[in-house]
Image 1 (cartoon, rainbow, N blue to C red):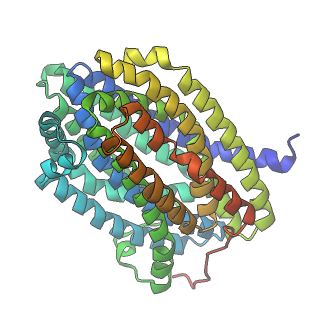
Image 2 (tube, one colour):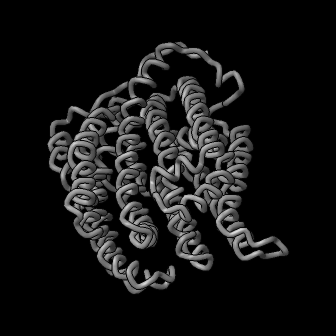
Length: 453
């Protein structure tokens, strides 16, 4: 049964996972609210915003990669109580994230049609999605600071603070969606542009709260000097450990975006059905994915303080408990079919697709849970992001993406069969992840000794 050691681990884990899961739940709720409210605008609005959101999705993957680099290093330095190095890591991460956010902001504002054309050739969807991207683009740059700062807060176990920040922004987003879509309180009915405006305003509010919190955190002190602090060794370490994470997220995200390209060219009905299923899948995965990312913080702290045997035992506890949570989520997702038709008013063909896509995602979610807890949880806690990069590159770009294009545009298989083929990619790479986990090659203390000041 449970030992004192395991009880302490699970207590610490759920202290972190609870706020992360709540944050993910509210984030998924925002997506749900978008779909429900846009349902009153029309099916084309749902499909267009879903495709346009892949640009944000790719940007978030860059930020997740940078945040993973921050957490990999900062969590281990937190285990050593080296706050000066954590501050320096924040400065490095914030500068890189700002550059990436600026590029995406400029592209979305000045060339939204070009970006939308990547995902669909439907002129109506391109026009609607372009309007959305142009309005939402300013938030891309401001989001850079917020994401990196929140990663630092997570690494020093201030997860509840992060949850308060993001929850405030997300709840505001939902409220403003209602105001701008339905024209509440005398506001004009802005439709898709209203959703984008609500998102942008909430991003700026989130940034303002981060600045407010930053001035009051006692454990670490961020000043303007922090952004320009020079430490060649830490910079090299950050690049060494974050670049594979960024590459992994970019490779994985680009792969998923290519799945969207395939679906976008198979018809708006499939895109609309997938939009609804994706919302429910996100809701079903909040706990298991929260456990994976939260566990990485605890394991990183233990590895940074050289408690290797303890970290190994807790890694096993993290993996099995996360798999259990993922299995429960997959079952609930499969049972949610009656609720899905209440979320949005789809036409007959899209409704037909929806049932099949739901069951495919249920199977895919369990595989994604296992791979996520290993790649993003266990391996990255030990500073190993390279393995995930190599594995995802091969599984997605040598197998799933070309196979999906071949089946869709050469063999002309049905949209549901093509969807099944590309969405079962998680099961292709699982065996390799398990083998790497058993090898223990991922477990490394990546901290260094610095004279602070």
